Image 1: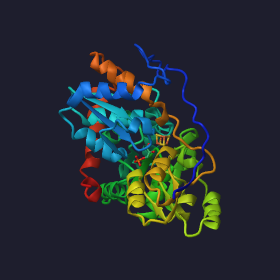
Image 2: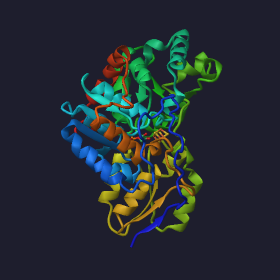
Image 3: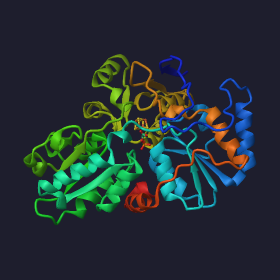
Image 4: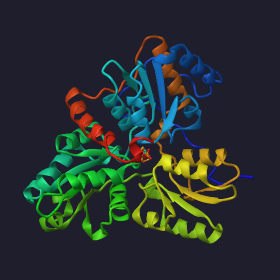
Length: 394
Ligand code: 13P
Ligand code: SF4
């Protein structure tokens, strides 16, 4: 018997079809109410055959994920995209930065399609290239730039990844942040005073990894606020820090609170708290287990029947896990609805529209990273894919 304490509020869907980047859907976008949407998606996918490969991030809606050839977290999807050189089209059911990474990691003749160009990521938008370049200049002014390795979370734009590639840095995901940080600190271990990391754009993943996995303390970390002069930091604070955390966060994972953890522990006997490392440090400190979406799935799959879990990550995934494991008690770690609104922009009408357009010979919503950005972003992504450790192979 499943007990699923999930909010049942109806999810509003975007009514407009004009993306924030100003691109309108050409052609016919099927109505949400079209009873043939599933059949149309199946038919379009069958007509495209091996020419199309559909990737689905774990936060996608069920109606979309059913058409994914593979599902995964950002790391797995980046590798899966790179491992499909024969597919002419990669339809990415995820968000913009993931599709950019897929474009960078696939061949020049392959086309990556994002069914809704407005499926962005608020966290990725919190670090703009000009801001990061200003921060880098400030590190130079403080006399420490030679000791700094930039590390960017996958959840960043291609030009931020390229910045890291240009400046001896690396990309990481929530699956391999620890290995990436070890690599980064080693790169400048010889520099007097030791290495520092500029971690972009998620302060929480950076802090949680540094403190919980790398043995650093909170005092080793400072937060660079791009909206304040010199990041709101003195040159001395920058010189003393080992981790310079960009002031970015995920609006979805930022909702989980330590107070709800306490409430659930008081009301559900033996509940285990399982959260994503994008959650705030005080939430992660109270959790039993912390890991990427792929880790969360594997943990629930391996859990014994009858065990109780409260999960702090995006709601589509938590609901899917609850449905797939009726013998376990799965609770959402928030009192209100907590979908990622941009992930949810990809819906069945858009997926049908994108695939039917391909069947008809029209490539819509192609994501193309410019060659110079692609070159340097690829360097940073490849450094990530080459990192040692089990995340490289599993
Ligand atoms: P992972 O896919 O790395 O677990 O990250 C979660 C996320 O927020 C993706 O946008
Ligand atoms: Fe961005 Fe957070 Fe949504 Fe992931 S869940 S795409 S980090 S806003």
